Image 1 (cartoon, rainbow, N blue to C red):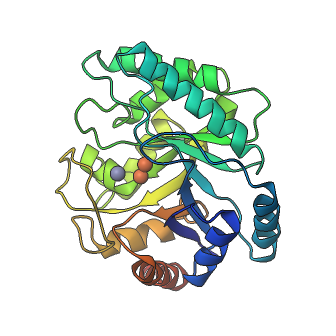
Image 2 (image 1 turned 90 degrees about the horizontal axis):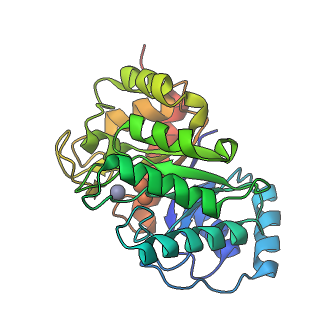
Length: 281
Ligand code: FE
Ligand code: FE
Ligand code: ZN
């Protein structure tokens, strides 16, 4: 069975997110660890976490995905901003350990003119300060669209970060379909070739999750504007092929499309149907 869910508001806690996910046909979800614009996190509610763990077992939720605030910039120019990034990440990872074995995704950052090489070094340094050898949380680098000075729009850049971290065994990659298509990887017409390239450069064993988003912009536009599934430049069939692909079908999928719950429910139902039906020969 497909593992699929969408981004949800975490304001009412884990059990609420689990129940809300079930109500729209999802068996996983993504949430922000704190206000997406940064700021301090709420105190952990251990009773809520225990209740969610029971719910997850009884409802077949395999794994969930936490998302770091998107304002974190591990490769900022200002030392204070970089310190804030690793301190926030360390705190997020520590908190995630209350719910062991989940995943934590973050945007590598923008080098703001310092150059890709410097950016890669800062990002690796951030991870090396925030991660611990005993953590059970897997930290995911998200593939980026390459807007402005974003690091991580080329597989080679993600590889270079992984090559510089102390605990690569606790790391993986989250492939965002809108971002990679905007970055110039043609997952619509050349999905097999893109996956072969990912395998050659990063290794498919590092691919741990996908963000399913259509794009408001054309191929290789480097823009990053998400669209509803089937309403953008990737088109519905591309997503049907993705959820049926033998290399991808058992990974967790997360929708980050511009939707309310009913819209997400419809996208999940459509993708589940495609996965059950399989592709025409
Ligand atoms: Fe993201
Ligand atoms: Fe994403
Ligand atoms: Zn995006």
